[in-house]
Image (tube, rainbow, N blue to C red; front, top):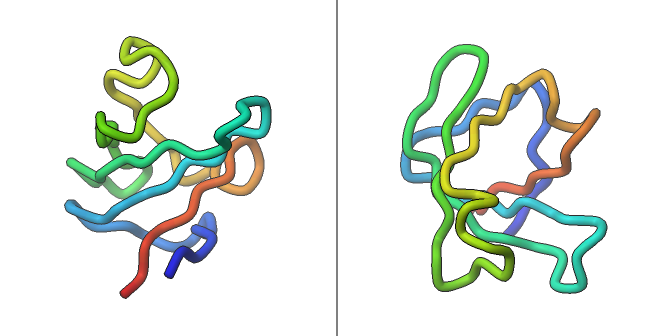
Length: 78
């Protein structure tokens, strides 16, 4: 089940992330966490599900501070 990721919640390598795009018709893109740090984590797209050009999301760093303020992200929880 998808759950909203909170600013204080940490993710682990291998977690599935859904980034919600408010301006795109298909309003989600799936990513996998490939690296974590205390203040940020790094995502790579699951290429089968990317609607946007690959260069847009070739590699994305997400700061925990931005979650909930500038971007909306959900994490898959079994």
